[in-house]
Length: 167
Image (cartoon, rainbow, N blue to C red):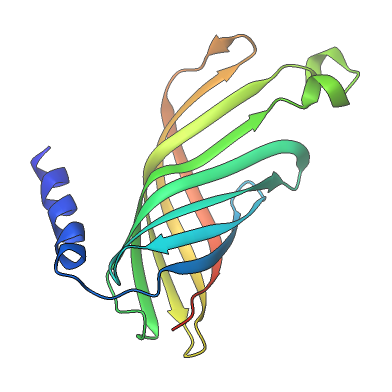
């Protein structure tokens, strides 16, 4: 618990100090499970933001996937090298369309999986505001599938991220 308080204090200190931010940025990502997502990030300061993305899984288009994470930026937005920490719902997948799309009984169950955890993102931002990054981390996966809750398990999270932020 003490470690979490120290990390939260380190992430919030620059925001509370009044660091400037560009406010909104466009985000997209392709994750380990071929989830293609797009969304936005709102930066409260140059060092703290909130990101939300949503999309579909390319291997099963009836699956909807989304993320909602707090983002700590450890480098200023004008720096080429970028290092971020992300904490929150790093991956969530649900499929409520399967009963209406598939005729095979084994494919008609609805399910939802949510993974809460943390990731680190390392990337490069060009002077034009475009950024490419690789993200890695993991979290605790909880899910409802085949009519019952699954056991909690570790879930890896890897992705390629693209963003554009006006500087």
